Image 1 (cartoon, rainbow, N blue to C red):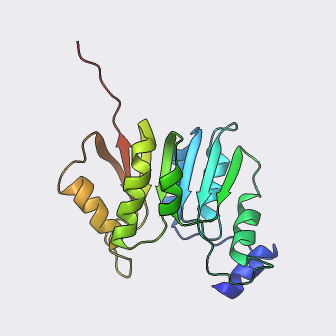
Image 2 (image 1 turned 30 degrees about the horizontal axis):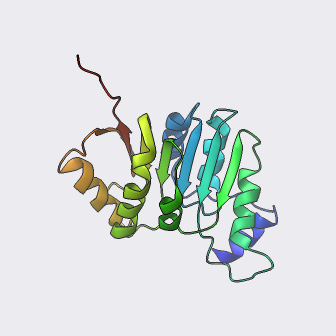
Length: 195
């Protein structure tokens, strides 16, 4: 993958998606018109490019990834590749946060209406991403978990988190609204005032 990423960084090849065409449609469907989007796990920026194309033109998209695999201090190939891919669209404002998501969540204070969790796929890291960012998701906002449907060769961490939070018991105030490919979408329910 490293050699391929160099070609993306140089603009010779496009960013490689880590999702299917069906999953890309799901990402776009729920990101359409959203104003405050967060993606955890950016890789070469293919999914972020999809989000940017459909988000509100005045919205903000925060892209969280440590881009840690590049050791060259002069040319961070992965970050340059992601910036090039996402930069193919000029819609909204993009904020690259080059650090681990659990560190970002400790400092986070902004409302979110779209959260895509696709970073470290170990159970404890997926759960930490949920616990760190879900409290900031507004009523009506959505959280998408990638690789959260059991599939051969896929990691089990996201599946375990979604099973624990939403399938074996309903996380209060949240419900599953779609499953497409390996993506599970949950929505924070609108608060209803009773008299």
